Amino acid sequence: MRALYIASTGMAAQERNVEVISNNIANMRTTGYKKQRAEFQDLLYQQLRRAGSQSSDAGTIVPVGVEIGSGVRTAATSRVTSQGSVVPTEKELDLAIRGEGYFVITLPDGRTAYTRDGSFERSATGEIVTVDGYTVQPGIVIPEDARDIAINASGVVEAYIGTESTPTELGQVQLATFVNTAGLASIGENLFSETPASGAPQTGMPGTNGVGDLLQSYLEMSNVNAVTEIADMISAQRAYEMNARVISGADEMLRATANLT
Image (cartoon, rainbow, N blue to C red):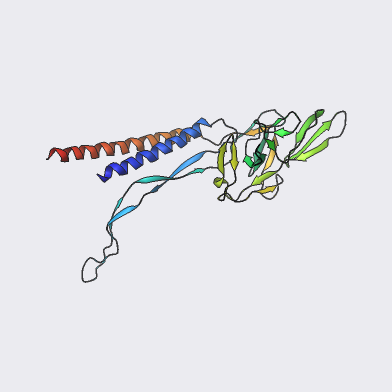
């Protein structure tokens, strides 16, 4: 029976929905994480009686047709890029983006990646890097004898070198923006890569031309709302159960039909 296959697509779709929700919940404490949302589309329809066709030789038109759907499929797992909560950390190299933009990261193989995770460290050579040791562009180096490192809202990095009484500018953190941030590809480690859907990155100074500004000694947490995710999880479970009951009902109908012979 067609109902068996239709209900199976519904179960598969809700299983995927639960997988997306569980990943959101798992990353509730992941710095800079942006939650995902599963989106669905109905499948092709079989036209048993087409609306608009003639129903008699007199030219009368069928006002409403007969269509039987074939189920549902997962169309996308879109990423919600709303601002996450910003929390203080008291660590001088922690940076939070307030507004639009991504930190630009150079990977070991030379590729460029992007992240909202601003938990940075100093490498053995004094360069500002991610927790995995990837260089934060444009490759700012903090001297070994630097003290009182300050990063302002525009991304300018300053520090007092040695016994100097005035701060020295060491560089400026740049941010990248995209026309379609939801089109970025997740590559793990809190990193994203550019895709044809995201558009080319536009690199600029924080706080200018729509680019967000920076907060030193703060981190942006994930934008996952635990209550919403649990409610969505319960809804997905109930939808899965209802599809399973459809399969059970169709099985009972087939069994009754088989017992007639």
